[in-house]
Figure (cartoon, helix red, strand yellow):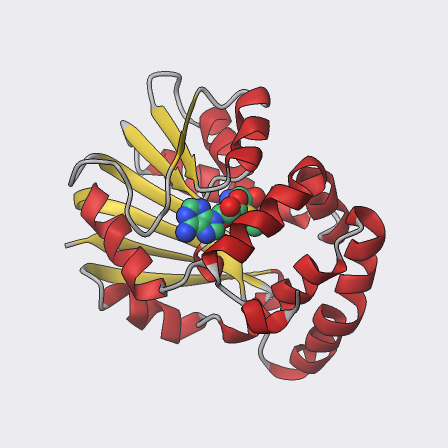
Length: 230
Ligand SMILES: C[S@@+](CC[C@H](N)C(=O)[O-])C[C@H]1O[C@@H](n2cnc3c(N)ncnc32)[C@H](O)[C@@H]1O
């Protein structure tokens, strides 16, 4: 299935179930390890907020949640949620203590139950960005922190070469590694459609947040967005 199926939840869940076994290695190869540095930066930011309860939405194989777990004191409770049980199996095996199968659009958590909510490379796959951000706001206590890490398109002269890489090179390379070219054709399309920079900051603030900030990473091929719940 190709780009036209973007954000169809059953397609997304099934696509991740198919690549779950190879997800971690493929990520590190395709990003040449840069994704590890991005997640470490996020984990340091989360630690600085001194949270008690952290929720990592769309945790997948737990890469970000595990970095946060390593960076924070042991009393900090970290929950990883995802609607793809096959991905969560790997998160548990890799040492994430608390995982819950849950759709980010309607999570089984009480209002105001977390100090920090993170989502890495997950929001972009959701059927309704604003609705997903509102649901994350609901489970955050007032003053709690939201952090979104996701791909973005670089500005300036790198933009077109990077788009060429995304659409022409990456699906073929990932196809060789995973045997699933279509899941990575989907990736390029989803990055094109996803709001970034100021647009994403405005989208977040419109869902009950203040002080949204944008932190571009590696020439802008990814960005961290932070904001505080009103
Ligand atoms: C690219 S992976 C990211 C995993 C992990 N956060 C990371 O940084 O490696 C995207 C994950 O989002 C999950 N996902 C997508 N839409 C979701 C939704 N509506 N509810 C819960 N999980 C979702 C997928 O199942 C998948 O595990």
